[in-house]
Image (cartoon, rainbow, N blue to C red):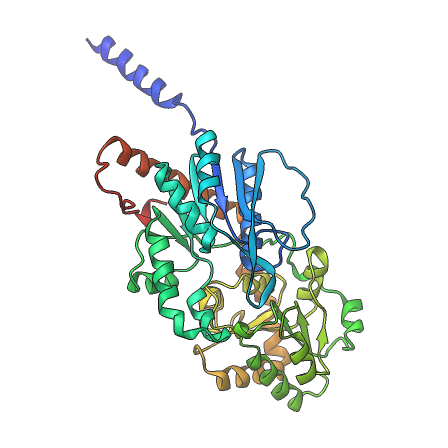
Length: 422
């Protein structure tokens, strides 16, 4: 009997040890914006798709064709499906995808993806959720942008409530909604969002680094080695709260006339900013190593936005060796240690923001101390962990969906997602 038990235990160990590995996934990712477009969502999604492809998964990106778009070189494992779109108000270079449901039904009937992930909430995203549910495909989503908060900056505040209701309904029709911070998760839960799971973001620490600092670039900006450079990187648009940047710049230059304001990025406010701050340097859009050099060649990074759900520029600035001044909000609230790698002020307190900017710029020893700790504070935030967590969340959603199909199919609602399982 003992021999038989030993044989049985050995067989159990062998079965467990040689169980089939998880198969590679075929992921349909639906988005209104995608690299090489220059914004935080497009950058994040480009990174995620690259990580999926590197791990052997197949990705089908469904997105609107953008204006002046050149054909992309094909990549193994990547299939791009382009829909029609219409320009987004105040973002003429970006397009909302028009409803695409019938095409998606045919596309996914012919070759079913393992899961559909909806990254943006426009008409294209709604079509994708609807098509996936008709085909009984598991579907997940991401919450990247507070569109309802943006409404007040573009004169459409009266429809803020309907926008919020639309966003909540779309996300609640998915098995899991990925959000970048714990604070945002709690806010959305209080607003009636279900099935939320935390999915933070990474930073390309191999690209953004203090050693990219360029004295030659600083010379072109007209600053000496010990002059303070205030840096802003991002879209030049109303929702970025750039009036606070101008107020901070003015106050700093009243104390330090040689301090320089540098804007990296473009957008509809560029002309107005140039008129309001003619002594500033406007560098336009930058990418790759040029962007890394622009980051690292600053000293104090100003992040005054109150509408971000995350703010990729914050970890990029820290990785580049900059002290960061921000409201206690979004990514900054998690990444900034006040007095250690930057400074935090209460959300919306512009006077506190300006005073903190003047204090930091006027104290070279404190500024240098903050900068010396900045890069190390985000050194753990490489993208590999983000990719692995994203894939785990997809697999968890697929497993839950399969359980529902084999059991209770009477409930048409998305099953509750357990954030602790991903």
